[in-house]
Structure formats: C-alpha cells, structure tokens
Length: 316
Image (cartoon, rainbow, N blue to C red; front, side, top):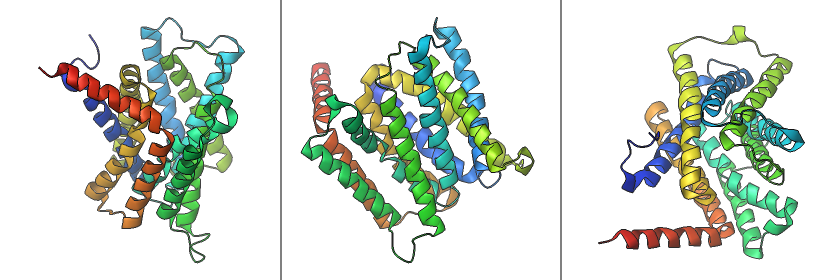
C-alpha cells in the first residue's frame, strides 16, 4: 500500500503539492521559534542527525542500495551533504537569528533562479538565453525589494541576517548544480539519507568550532514542539512527500513549491506570532516569481499544456 493511498486519486498531485508547501513553508517559522531556545548550528545538526537516521532506515527497507559505491557516488553525497544540507541550513539558521521566518522564506525562494544561473555557467547545455538572464536579474531585484537596503541600514542586524539567508540560497543552488554532472546511480532516498547524515556531521562540527554547547539549550515545550516538527514533519515526512511528488510530476512542478513556501510562512507567522510582512516584501516575492517564470517559461508552458491535456482527457 502506497503512503498516499489515503488521498483521492483525482487530486493527489495537488494535495501533495499543498501539503509539501505547508510543511516546508511552516518550517521557517518553526526555526524562528526554536532559535529562542537552541543555538542555531546545534539545532540544525541535531535535527538532521535524527532525520537522516530515519530516512536511512527507510532507504534500507525500500531499496537494495544503502551505501554509495565508487568515487562518483561518494562525491554526490559529499556535495549534497556539505552544500544542500550543512551550508544551506547553517546559514539559514544563523540568518534567522536576525530576520523573520517569512522574510527568510521569501529570500530563499531565489534558490531556483540561482540554480538556473549557476547551471548556465557550469553546464554548457543549460546556458541561459537573454530572457533567462533578464529573469535572473529580476530575481535579484526581488531580493533587493525584500531587504530594502539603505545607507542607514547597511551593517544592521536585519541586513546581516538577509545576507546570511541569501548565502544559504546560494549554497543550496550551487550544491544542486555541482551534483548534476557526477555519475551516480544511487537511489534518491539513499542519497538523501547520506546527505543528511554528512550534513549533520558538518553542522555539529561547525557548532563546536563556534562554541555552541548543549548546556545552552533551554528545554521548554516550545523547544520540543519546534524540534519535533522540524525533524519529523518538515524533515522526514516532507521528504517522503517530495520523493513521491518528484516521481509523479517531475522536477519543474516540484520547484514551484519554493514559491508557495513564503506565502505559507507569511500566513503561519501572522497566526502564530502576529507578524505581518510589509508591502515591499510581497512585491519582492512577486518579482522573484516573475524572474523564475522568465527563466523556466518553456518548461512551465510544457507543464501547463500537459495539465490542460490531462484535464480535457478526463472530461466526460
């Protein structure tokens, strides 16, 4: 029995998309709450140590490959663990010490645009056309709208936080591109498990170098709820949904989750913390989305055409 058999077949893709966006969008707010009680890198490292162990157990049950073989596969898990898990989450958690989860989610939504930009430089077959370059620049304009830089704000905590979060998006994008040319037949569940465990090791080592201590953790109900949610829901459960959605719809539609996440984060921030983003943050999000549409216009057109064809074929 599939893990999604409880969802009616006719709306599974939309349901998976919505649930995944809810899980990952709300995680930015859960991080913001948890950082009140747990040092950032220790928080991220412990989260992925547990999540990685659970995903590894799942991979062991569902696949016949639980260990990388050869330089290519070890390189793939090392790159994913270092960039996509450790650097991405380390910089994100550090950044959220200074900016809200909603703002962080909006800045992180530039990751697909940055991925396309890096791919155009590193991978000749994915070089950006002029419209793609314009979309990349439009995405950067969106970040500027969110950060709202000024001479007075330069060097402020908010600017520092925004730069750190943008650095996390850069790390995620760069890791996503660097792993593509590596020859690896490792199942995605196994690759993700190893990436989580390697990333956790890097994060915990980084926490030690930064002087973070377990003794600094304040064990409260908010701490337990935040950590449990991030580990089990946003970490383990959401990645299982991600694997399923990726297999069912393909990478382009999964990437669109990145643009639903900030909307979810804004809503959860308002409900849980009473935080409202300003109008420029909303303008920035729309601008970033417009940049992504310019870059991925052909793939999105193909996805839309397939969706319309599928809808027409099911109409009696």
